[in-house]
Image (cartoon, rainbow, N blue to C red; front, side, top):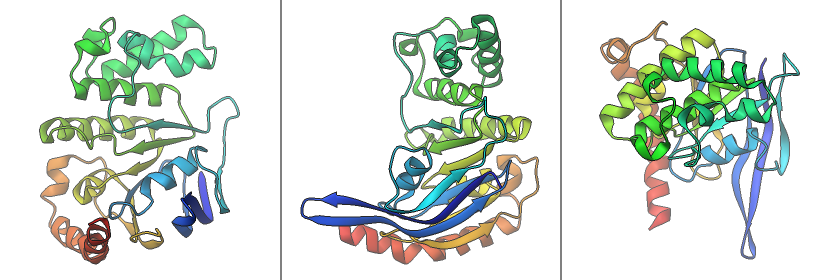
Length: 258
């Protein structure tokens, strides 16, 4: 196994109260698995990802990333929205994690440049983020995360703020890069169809406190394309199965927020 989450509970103080974000969540990921996390708003998806990243402390239970190479970072994270440094060029942004690991400049620029070309930014190595569209800036963040070659790649709704066409393009590019690298990925999304297109497994969390409601194996063969998945006869059936698990909890979450 590459990632083990065992009986994870995460609580936060809220005024005089204690809010339980996650309650007794357990699952394992094998090396090279792509796992999507879905659930209603406020169910603890991002809390789970941030706890795996070490940004939150578990209240109880544990998270363990089983390292295969001590020279590689345990994890790297891609956030929703712009997370690139505006004062750095595209190439230096993509190479930043390698720079922090003290990789020699020629080698880090070679690795970062190759990944930037893979995401269609080969002509923009010396550009600055202000000269790029939002979708292009997110490609830089994805290239930076892959360049670090982490044991586990964590992605927190990385395409959530993008328009539909840009999101489809980046989903396709992510599929292609992932199939080339075989990286272990945990991907948080609100989109059921996005989870089905990208993932090997879909973990469904309940409304807060988030508990593991289902762990679904995605049946579509790899390599994949968006068109191939959406035209598969099982697509609608699986979508309805997952929506059936989420529907009542999503309505409950909306009602609680009013």
